[in-house]
Amino acid sequence: MLPYGRQTVTEEDIEAVAAVLRTDWLTTGPQVEGFEADLAKWTGGVGCASVSNGTAALHVAYAAAGVGPGDEVIVPPMTFVATASSAALLGAKIVFADVEEETFTLDPAAAAAATTSRTKVVSAVDYAGHPADYDALRAALRGSDALLLADAAHSIGATYRGRPVGTLADLTTFSFFPTKHLTTGEGGAVAAPDPGLLERARRFRNIGLVRDRAEQRWPDEGGWHQEVHEFGLNYRLPDVLCALGRAQLRRLDAFLARRAELVARYDEALAGLDGVLTPGRRSWAEPAWHLYPIRVLDGRRREVYDAMRAAGIGVQVNYIPVHWHPAFADLGYRRGSCPVAESFYTQQLSLPLYPTLSDADQDRVIDALGAALRGRPASAVA
Ligand SMILES: *Cc1c(COP(=O)(O)O)cnc(C)c1O
Image (cartoon, rainbow, N blue to C red; front, side, top):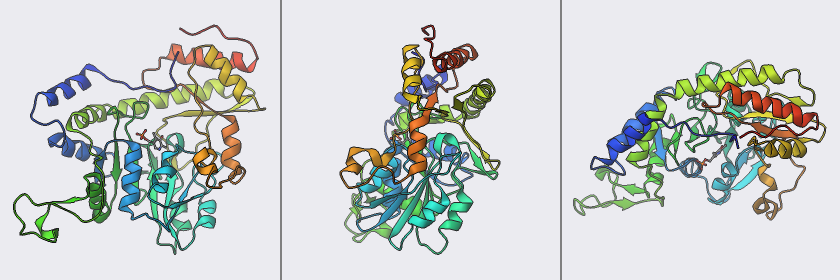
């Protein structure tokens, strides 16, 4: 089965990890700082805190923003559930706001309509690697104290009006899961231009421990002393995995370039195919394509999904609208509240996209899609 996404791990990566295993550091050591500094080169110099996964990055970011009971957090439903569930765990009420046609990122008008005096954070998601419309979102939030968060699990390396992802929001979160643009096995990061927010993120990631004597309540307790002022969790990304991340970052340009090449080939091959629509792109965006999300028309998504799976093509659906999950349904969230996202979901299909996908394998995906649309079984792919 051709997967819809997969990691690219080379001997260089393996060497980088092995080298750290031979040192005294397994967890927090020099690779952590090194990885965070290397990451900041991709976020326009905005400071980054590495964490143990992308879900942890969201949890850390919401905690740093001070999200708690009584607060509202606005989230688009076209995302992975963690964008919403991590804020719900902190006691916030999630308010779903619909997405725009064409990019399926948070609609600034819907976000504005959903904003109240209790809105603490508005979370945009760079769906498939296409940046949300950040200037319009900022304008929509004028007059509100809400922070803007970018879930950039799909979009490291993308730019919006020439500005890199990481500089576009008050808090930006990344995931380094194997299918994403770079991997540390499990891993993630939070970027924040405001040093105070970044420090709160770092502290939550490290159990809330305060080690700086200048900030301690009882600094004269002794050399061993550390204090917790606000609860946190252990979300540290170990040195070993940061070394993998640094090696991966050295090839991120090449990964993104190959993905862009594959996207251009898909765009061209599928342009004339009846029954499907290719992903939209706004003139102000330079996306970093993580997914290649097509739309299958005429109610045939399920049939095309099954046919392609049967042909050995690992297509995927990204995503079930978050408010459809039973955990949200049980809280009273209803289907039909976000019609653009929900209609998109019924058509959406992600085609295989990853840097080592060969032209020949991509051609088989294209052929299998054509065959599925013609209602004929494609020959199986090994
Ligand atoms: C992958 C992903 C996450 C969660 O990241 P993990 O590293 O898997 O925890 C969050 N949001 C989006 C949009 C994602 O794609």
